[in-house]
Length: 241
Ligand SMILES: Cc1cc2nc3c(=O)[nH]c(=O)nc-3n(C[C@H](O)[C@H](O)[C@H](O)COP(=O)(O)O)c2cc1C
Image (tube, rainbow, N blue to C red):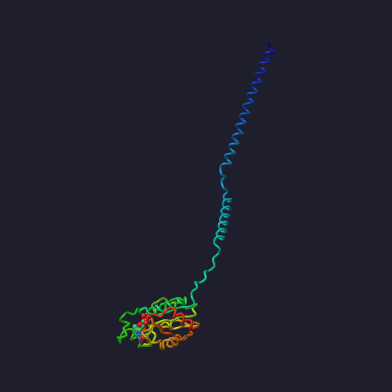
């Protein structure tokens, strides 16, 4: 009987020991899971950026942006000044006839147009050549008059040939042409006068203006009727060469 009791006791003790061991294993498993979960969590949570690393990255990004900007937009050189024709067709026209001829010369030569406008425009009364005291008659009778130019100033840089057009007033160039030729420097430029009229020739207009200008190579001028064609102008221009 004693032997039986001690066997039962021994089993009870063994069972107790086994149960204790099991709970320890379970606790260990739970601990391991917690650590794993904690590690997983740490891995998922984005790491707080080290300010220095952040700064370095930002600097790198900025450098990269600068490089790609440089690649996208290569350094621009100063834009070359816009080129223009080396021919200028400058003209004064009170009633539009010379204007039309000037436009045809520009069309034939590919030249630029420049209109000489009076600061104080000529009225119909001003142009009345039957009136001895009209503005145009008074101006043409006084060679020292210099009517003011109202159109924007032009640079003659780059022009090698200037066709200079005007109507004939009392046998010569209107005084505003004298203002024009005294205002600009025609050094190195070939100047070709042309005019329209009711019938008179160009007369002394060219030589008058040449002596007032004091520079430039002045060719003999030509008178045209208002309805001269481009073909006629073309053959006149070819004859000048
Ligand atoms: C004040 C004045 C004087 C003029 N004198 C003459 C002249 O002496 N001889 C002539 O043939 N035509 C003369 N004309 C006519 C113009 O020369 C002619 O109508 C010219 O084609 C007008 O050109 P525009 O329309 O470009 O101003 C005169 C015109 C004006 C207004």
